[in-house]
Image (cartoon, rainbow, N blue to C red):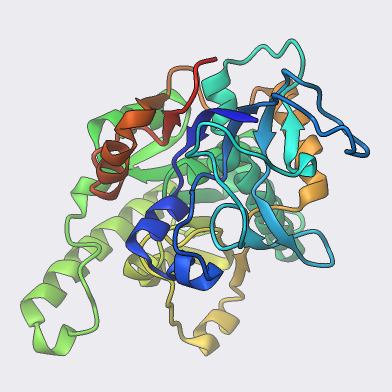
Length: 348
């Protein structure tokens, strides 16, 4: 196969920084070719392949499954921590046909919109689990009375679009004029992150740095007041938090009773701590998911096609293959306004 468009993901940034793991060391390999989400063209199918569902010339989505558990969830991710897997940052490659999912024939949507599918497949799985958990405790009240809030990137955006479709109030933090406008244009209430400049200040040295602690507390209080206004004073029903440690205490403080924290990423810190008793008394449910279930892939693809639930037209930014180092630097330094950064490997 030959890659056409690849989606730049947080896992690629993690690999380059060798944190939270060194994937080369973990795989026992000197070098790793990254890129586990994107659109590829099938060039040739091995004559001995069985149950082949793709044809030469097909445009397909790469499914990022390396090692599966007994229920078909990913234990190791393709082109990340799974040994002997080659990602999309190569002009041509070979892969197991079971990892290729054809784009529907005659699709109404452009290739860049499809190339963002990884964030949407992940969001579909995380939202379905989070919403199901929320409903186990709030069985009768209508979603219109409840707020779903997110901070993160494209996955959080995709989840909020599902929440909006389900009838929830939806809001999301954004840190630039471009993203604030993007959220508003898509029916999500934007909360300008710049209004709370000290929200992410470290909390561990509060006693030795009183001034910093006061600054952070002021930002936290201001943010929580916004949440109260948006939720009629009750707090967030489902909080999509794919940031992690710097904002985790704020997430929990903003959460309503019987609320759900939904996590499927850890952009800025994996180690979290909370008061277990307080979380129990408030009946908070913590939902942690990773990737999605392989057999669900065709169903999610078909839902995207029929409902148009995918990256809005023109919302992606595409770097050429020789600009991938620039893309990596821009992503790491927060210089990309789009939630859907991509790289082009071969022409369509």
